[in-house]
Image 1: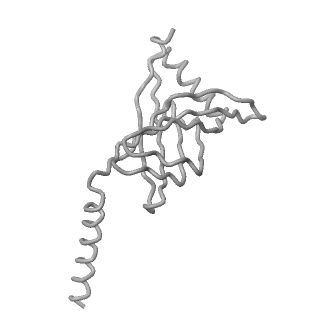
Image 2: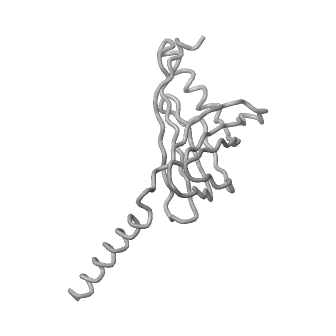
Length: 154
């Protein structure tokens, strides 16, 4: 039994080290929000066009099999969407993609209420993107967060 446990631990260590060995130059992709544009509304659902810029800083192509994202404003989820079949992003390059998403109007009203209560102060945001690839079972999660000063926008 001890031999079996020892072999299991040794196998796990070798598998983990081989992942690092075969992709020592792997760097996590970067995703940033570059556009939010309203489309036609359908009942209480507002459709919008979302533009994302995906940067691949790695030395190998980023083959995206699926992508999901959500945008929070003032810690309230406002926009979410998913897509399949994006073109691979070559190594050391970037790609702009435009996707459609839905906005929950009730969440939008809650954000508006929060902004009004803050007297036009900064609006916090968080963009969480999960990228699924064909070579790795678990999605790569990329989070970008910050704040937008509404007083500076004129």
